[in-house]
Amino acid sequence: MSVLVELFIGGLMSGLVVGLAALAITLVFGIARFPNAATGDAMTLGAFVALSVSAITGSVIIGGLIAAVMGVAVGVGAYVLVFRKLAGRSSVANLLASMGIAFFVRAVVGLIFGHQQQVFQLPLVRPWRVFDIRIQPSDLTLATVALVTLGAVFLVLHMTPVGRRMRAVADDPGLARVSGISPTRVMIALWAMTGSVSAIAGVMYGIKTVVTPEMGWDMLLPAFAAAILGGIGHPVGAIVAGVLLGALQEMSTPLVGFTYKIAISFVVLLIVLLVRPQGLLGQAEGAR
Amino acid sequence: MLPYFVAILIIAAIYVLLALGLNLQFGLTGLINFGHVGFFCIGAYTAALLGQAGVPWPLTFLVGAALAAIAAWPLGLVSLKLKDDYFAIVSLGFSEIVRIIVTSEQWLTKGVQGLTGIPKLMGFLGTGLSQALAVLGILVAVNVLAGLAKLRIVRSPFGRMLEAIRDNEEGVKALGKDPAGFKIQVLMLGAALAGIAGGFYAHYIGYIVPEQFIPLVTFYVWMAIIIGGVGSISGAVAGTLILMVFLEGSRFLRDIVPFVSEVDMASIRLGAIGLALVLFILYRPQGLMGDYSTR
Image (tube, rainbow over all chains, first blue to last red; front, side, top):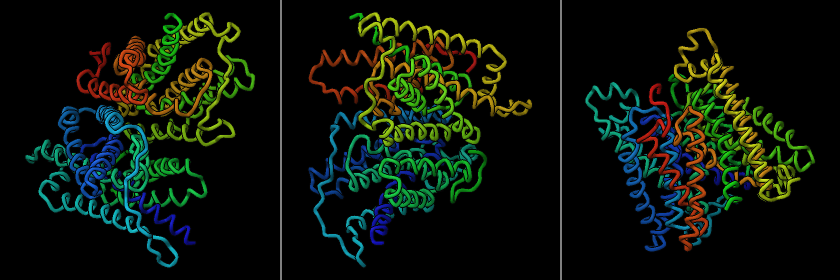
């Protein structure tokens, strides 16, 4: 029994990572209207930056913060250099360009940081025991970071003027434009947010597992699945779906084995798209 | 030098076959297939396993193509219900699942160790230049056949229907035609071509491992048809040749700049493909030889 609960906690943690990645995807999908395939590699970059900075400064927190700043820079840079010029083109053009950016970022990461597996140097802490169940204190910290990130995104979306404009663009880009909302400023805010969320997700993933140039790409499919399961453009849905999917993946590991874990998210993705394309929390809005 | 040149041409011809399949799906019909490598993989593993079991080569290719096409059928059914970009994600996922399956099912595929000792195509000619030239000859013949078939399709009512689906699916429906069957057929046709390409790959290289079937291969093919120009056969051929010159040229670069390690070179290649993809989408979406008039 306690083994199952520990698996569930592990699933919860990886689910929060998937959820944050899905949050980054769902924001872009909902507002800029294309699936951003560079999300995974932005995560990888964040993990490597945090790893390097924390190795120099000795503080994972500083590393994470620098990674988030770096994520903002990469997100805004990608928008200004590429996606701004693709506004009005088909979502396919945007998707292909994001794929190109993904490859480019991964290549740069590989060249700068090397191709070996690396791990965060964290002090070993004795896990707490609650009713025979082991809980890592670091898991609690990471969960807090994930929830704070979600809270920050939520605050920006619902409590600030730029967030209101973002939601207006998400609802109806044309109407937002004639109402005098500048698409460029909204988009820069969106990409800054997306970049930092991706980087934070990458840092969390790196702390939980190992850091490799391929780590983010491997997260892409589960993250897409979670974004669609949660309902496109729905931040809370993304996190909830991520946690569900993460828990499902971890708890099924004893049954299906390690390699088929990722396949589960694909099956979920297919079922959701065919049965309930608007996702768990989304509203029906036409065909997917 | 000549054997090396022939070897590059063989790989290029295999990629042209892949590009022709994708051309049919994306260029003609507008299906965004991000899982092309999955069909390539199915064809390669089928041909390899049958070849190892002693099945003669034309048969291994046909079974590989048939299995790839059958695998495309459920994907085609799914594609009917999804918008473009969602289908792209689903097909990408499909190819990753194929790779996970060939990695995991070790009883059949030997997992990450891969399959070795696949009978060489035209193996009775030995392993020298004459064998390579014979393989190249067969490949060129298959490519010409596939190209002619594609031309035939483009000019047939079937082809016009596909273009109509690409340009305005709602309009096609309004005219009382059902796009569903056409989309599935095109997906299966392209998959069969990829399956044949996989058969050639397995029988030519002689060993296959799951690592050879990563999504990057799909995007090599995408890159080829985007460089050349979406929708035209000459574009597919030219784009593939440019891509091959680049991929192989980067190996020469390694001879000139010896301190670059193999993994770094792989990164440089990946980065250059990514950058080229972005630049072409931004500045030359119709490709080098694309049709400027209709799209």
